[in-house]
Image (cartoon, rainbow, N blue to C red; front, side, top):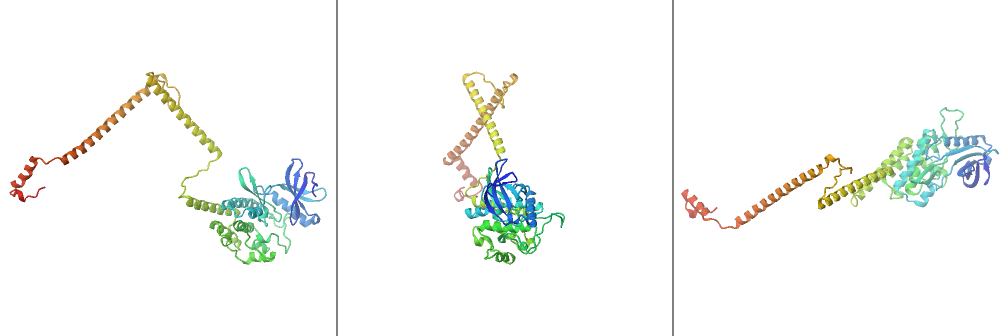
Length: 425
């Protein structure tokens, strides 16, 4: 099929993957010379009306989603030769499975950032009545944008169930009896039992994805798909910290809550998971701040580019004012040394009116008198204190006066006491 032009618009360049229903090609949108992805239904399935309907339902479900973290659908339909196709935006970058394999262990802030984006995409899908039902790392693309390193796109709503408002209506599609769709390692217990699904089934899959991001492996593995599904139904997962000891406790708690067997025990919505991830983020930041408080107690404030520009403008204004004041002071000193009358600037740098020219000099003279008076009083106080201490030192070392002795000896005699018996005070 390489080189084939689909619907006179898309030229297939190379096959990049294959799914249960079709083959995925990288292609070029001829009119815009833009890279896109084309998904073609397998030729042997084209004649199956039920599968063709399901293929169109996939395109309709995905086209309803208008969110930055959801894959964008450009077009879908049937080509001239009867091939069913979906045209999607092309995402350059690895999927999450490759990222985990190549870069494990992942830092907790990075895990939180990517999962918040996945949950935002799921919230958009659930709000439009779409349950993904096959969420796994291979369906989560991670790319880089100019201001964001790990930007997430959720792909492949290939087995998504579109919940029509009119039950049994023409657009309703029910999975064939006895057929369970999904990937066993990421399948919720209710999905494995073939029950009616809601968004909480996707949240269970989010729990499996988080488990894999924390430990590098999935919680349940087996020799056969049935063995894996059986564990999802009946076996509690091993705590992530028992598999990889450096797991953040808050993320482990969230992971285990998402992997609850009963859907009622899980967070109700994708945005509730986002709130829990933000709480984990705050807890991790508090732990890092506590660990670094002894070494560095500085406060880091993050500023937007516009705030940085305002701050720089304020700094420049301050520097201009300082330079103006210094220039005025230098001019006044030069005028005083030469005996001439300097021009008197006001605080904002403008010239004073002629009638106000003498006011700064009067203010300066008054300020000088106050300073001289304060200096005089301070010197007098210091001299008085020094004189007092000098007097004390001299008086302590001087001999006792005879007059004082006479008084001291006369006092007990006047009282009828012998002088020699009186203790000397």
